Image 1 (cartoon, rainbow, N blue to C red):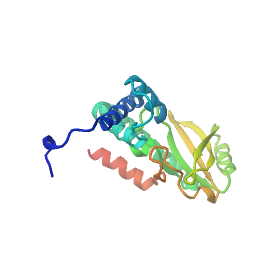
Image 2: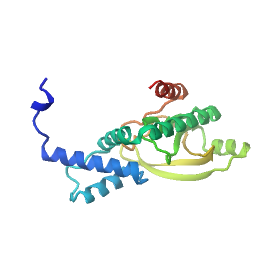
Image 3: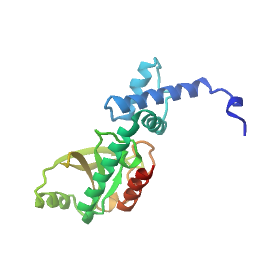
Image 4: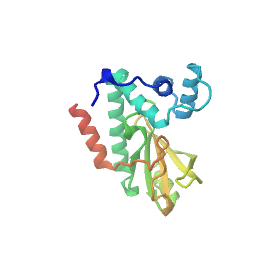
Length: 210
């Protein structure tokens, strides 16, 4: 295998992708932006890059975001992530009747102190989740999100947003058999990774050991 010194220099197009990915990651980490597409456009504009050809994928930006947080986030990022994962574990216990699964930035490790904890909750009808919250006297708000499905069609995902213990929880209601398959990951486009309580416990324990 050639040494790092003997490797061919990166092509200009690759350097451009890396530069845009790194700047987009910095925007996501420091400016409160959550949308990868907007961060990518901002980064390209700041670097004077026109056109969409050769711009990085969302996966490349996510990889740069993880590197940025590892380099500059320090203990504050690690503590925030642990707090959010512990909060997600408590919420999963509370909503255990709905077989909750953790998804998104809190699971992937890119969350910060402003991130929502996103859980997929499973039921026959969305009213079951609303009735459960009402029975426990928990205030909530309802939102909708349009997502592109694996076959290219669009679906409307029902969201229930709850604030508890100083954290904001987003319950994505997987009502009916049509949601049995994980939705596309908004970053990679593949089936979204889901984690149950046991895996979240392992992530928390592993971070404590490091």
